[in-house]
Image 1 (tube, rainbow, N blue to C red):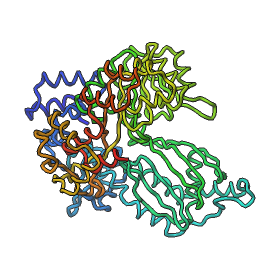
Image 2: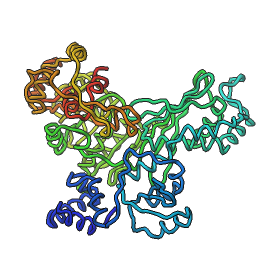
Image 3: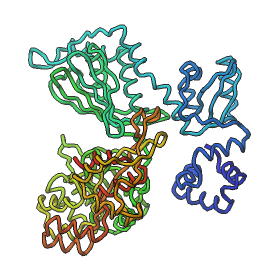
Image 4: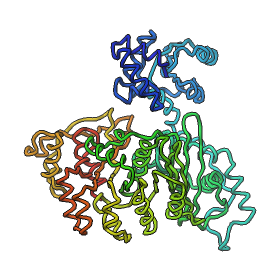
Length: 589
């Protein structure tokens, strides 16, 4: 990170931004509690790569872009990982007796002097970007198979019995002690640590450890898709299960009943909470861990992927002093992230915000967050009823699951509170009959609901290997069988995404990822939302009041110009953000 004065001078010397404009942006960044560097990149005044290239010229040091570069393991390891992480530097090449080091601070003379004594090599220092350093540090963790081969080739002996007991009860005290001892074995500790660490650096959302008859399968969910990562020998099963139970403060000797727990791991780089679920299966205990990044930055509406017209509707409705904002979609569709993004906009010193969640996924300053606990009967309904006695202006309820929660939520919205929550429905319009099924009267639904947002998450095309293509006739015919393509194309033309809907799909250029090292040859990197936002206008309210069928409400939404999830998906596919295959995968379930 550069100082504000350095960035100002770099931009001035490069004729990118005059002093007055810089000072204005600097004040805006300070108001939002953001660094000026990140704010300029976020506002697209300059890219990170361009800024650091200009900085290299300004400081008169060579610049290196490490993108797509595989670093030899011996060169990489010449700088220990903790030093690389702490001082943000990477050794990337060796030329005779001169080692080349990429750094964010080429002026950190003390660390370079230390490394010179350690390696005994001359140094050539390059400036690089923070993203390059992050990618470089990931390469310390690219050899998972080699790590496990060295850990398991000697064969770990299992001293404690695993699985179900013949006596129908828990393991004996001796076995419990044996399991605890096994969990402390250095190889077992290293296997579990490596599994967790590798998942964090790969950006996994879940880890699945699945026992089979002869081995253990380890899978990570990355960008919403499960990938096989590793097969481990069966003889480490008991040790891994015992170690994770100890980390999660669970009963080590309980193998017959499901158990749930959690633990955290933290470093300067990350702070991740793991939600652990263990269930007995025929071949042993299956373990699933959900990763929640507590250092994750809350996104903006733009970063979520909302179309400009949809964003205006959302902004208008969240600025209302009371009513309900509902976000719907299946599990894992990003509903909670959307709610946190909206809360972040509303989070000012003038309002009291309270939430009741399961679990608390992000910590937010000035927000009073409560977590439900079914074991002591602290439910969403009970939490919501209690929050109403806390003088709240804005309330977030993690999910409306039952009639009681729905009734309290509607009455809270009716009595002057802005209430945010989620439901499980496939699209925005089917939320209305879902609320009716919970015995909420039509007049209350019509008068308290401001907006219903439905969403899915799609994988984004990898920017490093993106390529364009035209759909072939067979694919177009298949799409026509499943979708009203003519209507979708009309909507694309109306939103100025294409110029002539009559030309058909065959003349539209779409995009896909070829597959490269950056994306693990999948063609995808990261995820973004596809949305539809149904505003409860006067016309929609009248239809709700007379219990109009869904198709009538859909026609009115069409008149109101609502962009459906599938239409939003096609807009993003045409703009090279995602693929047609991804849109079909998440919408045609």
